[in-house]
View 1: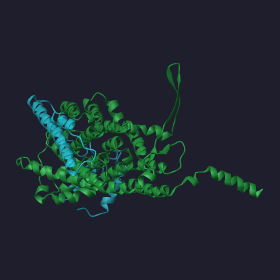
View 2: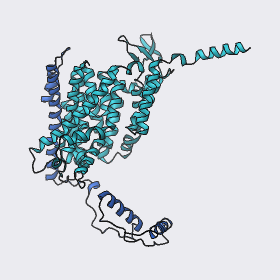
View 3: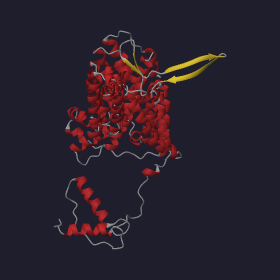
View 4: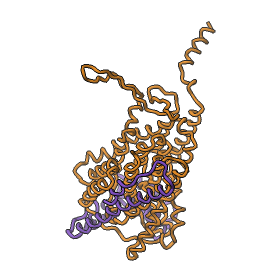
Amino acid sequence: MLLDILHDFGAFFQLTAFSAVTWQMVVMWGVCALLFYLGIHKKFEPLLLVPIAFGALLANLPTQGVITTAMAPDGHLESGILTLKMHAEAGAIRLDHIGGGLYDFISQGIKLEIFPPLIFLGVGALTDFGPLIANPRTLLLGAAAQLGVLITFLGANALGFTAKQAASIGIIGGADGPTAIFLTSKLAPELLGAVAVAAYTYMALVPLIQPPIMRALTTKNERRIRMRSMRQVSRTEKLVFALLVTITVILLVPAAAPLIAMLMLGNVLRECGVTERLLKASQNEIINVVTIFLGTSVGITMAGENFLRPQTLMIIGLGVIAFGFGTAGGVVAAKFLNLFSRMNPINPLIGSAGVSAVPMAARVSQVEGQKADPANFLLMHAMGPNVAGVIGTAVIAGYYIATLAK
Amino acid sequence: MIAVAALFAVSLPDNPTFADNLQFQITGLMVVVFSLGSLALLVALVGKLFAAFGSKPSPATAPAPTTPAPGPGEAIPAPVFAAIAAAVSTALGDSRFAIRGVQTVDPRSNMSWGAEGRRAIYASRKLR
């Protein structure tokens, strides 16, 4: 009798998933714990890092019905395998069955490049472009801060990454999560997990990464510069701006259209004043729901077999370089612009906000400015390059897609 | 249009040299600077047009009403004023603000119990 019980218990044990646990999964549990710690305890971009960490945990458990994986010809584990069964009938094809786990379907939002533009809809609905419109020069700071993206591309390529992979790593320097995910899913989906984690982690570390670079590149007198008060911007002018950006950027860089179009659609809903319900949905429900699915879908690409590679460490290292050069590019550009506008100078500290990371980077400019002059308020001035950085990153992503996604 | 032309012209070889990569990145920087620079010019132009035709600012940024602000005891209770003054003092980091005294409040006010508690606490301490 006892033997029978032991036998049955042994048979039941065979049905459990313990035997499917690999050493990579166990190591990744530690990585997930670190991500949970950073997201929950340190509050590093928790809205994204917590879903990413949970998705990564699911990816490293022997789940059933969550995600289907298979070994790709190049040896890496490919997730999200959908199986279609269909048959021809009287000249028509009939679909009998679609197979796949829960996240095989949900993560189509990333593979079909739907989630990042939807996040941009919410970002547009939440963003006030007034400071940018009041001081259009700051658009150039948003452009200069893309220097980090370009230099990191060169570094990544020199380290052996392909051009598509290098572009995906470089875009970390744009400090814009949805754009990084959009570009990486298009050019180098095998790096999606590492790029997204690096992008969101460094965005949270902006208050640590940027200040030393900002101080090193500016004198105390430059940090004390008080900028002129901004003019008031009417709602009509904001509406015209949204339409102007949509038309101009799509004409110049059509590949950036999904991101720019949704960003500006959200902003039009905000500024037109007659779509209150749509605006609230964009600012709250849509962006929140999509954030949950985007985060977990990114996390679920972090299977140990893919993530535990030297490449991941290189990506994390290159991410810091990207942020550093982006910050430096913005600050130096502001100093350069001051050569031509001595009567209305720009405080170079706001240049660093051109790396996006809205509004964290603008807050860093404000804090650093107040260290030099406690009565100087740079926050609203820094919001100009900050939102310009979002547009700039979308443009550079469009450039890479247009030239590399062949 | 230069940017569009550059996009069509730019292509990276399969095995690019450092010079190829550098050229590719410089073109990318030009595309971004040109795109955002064009936008800056257009936005500045539109701004001047709006200024010329005297467009009114949005209601959110309209000037403050000319009616005098309510004083203590009118719309904003005195303890709230004290809290605002303390917040301003803390934010500005100087000693130009001091609590001179705390008065008893109207017992009909719905803040009376809390205010009375605070009054008792303040009364037990030496005021600046």
